[in-house]
Image (cartoon, rainbow, N blue to C red; front, side, top):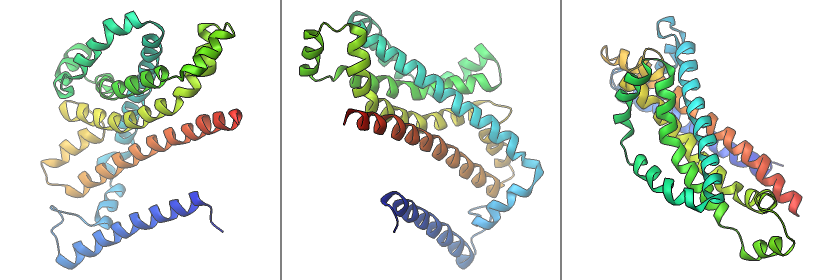
Length: 254
């Protein structure tokens, strides 16, 4: 007998395979030109060509995504804790972060290049600037939404602020933290590619710009597929961490 998780995974896998098969049949049946929509087989065939340097470009983009996401998660959670502990700091800084978040991130690309030159760091910072704000907001909300009865209980037992944070606020905020991190994982991929589109010397986004002029659509589609796999992998990692910490915390409480 399959477990619910295994059954869900099987359904997801079957649906994805069905879409790929339908894609292949459609291209073959209607004889769609390769420069408009390559078949899955033609797309995968580009992996065998050394001129695209897939591994090198994939590694650069993965480092940008992971670096921007980790930085965003750390800064977002740290600021949320600071805002929860100090309402005055929250009153002063949170509106400023809201305003800064309204800045179009594409507009930051040229500035980051002027400040930090070409390379991986401008793209990491763009990914960070896009993904950290949802993590900050959701974590701050989770830390602030504490049941009044629990607060009264800790205070009646003369618990310190650290005890309140460690025993009540932090465990209760974990679902919010991981909710923000799941959104941040998606946005970090977009941020890294935005940076590579603006100006970059390596990465999957850089490769897509290079092959666009020659209408090498199979390589562009393959780059999109690899980007999707990177995003799915990071999202799956966040889900695994959520199951590890949130489910374990629930079991400990029960």
